[in-house]
Image (cartoon, rainbow, N blue to C red):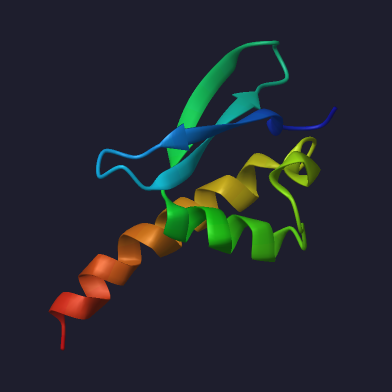
Length: 82
């Protein structure tokens, strides 16, 4: 395994009651950390990984998660600029 990868994916509820995902990132040293994704970030992540189902995300690189979180966050900043 080279770099941090998604090791586990679980369905989760967001603070507003919508569906999201909790992905677990496993690092090369064996450490793991959970990362919560809202529905918008989940859609971006699935699209960037060309995955049709969340289970297909296991083994994908951490960079996809980072990019999905950034895009999800940026949608709020872009809406304020208008």
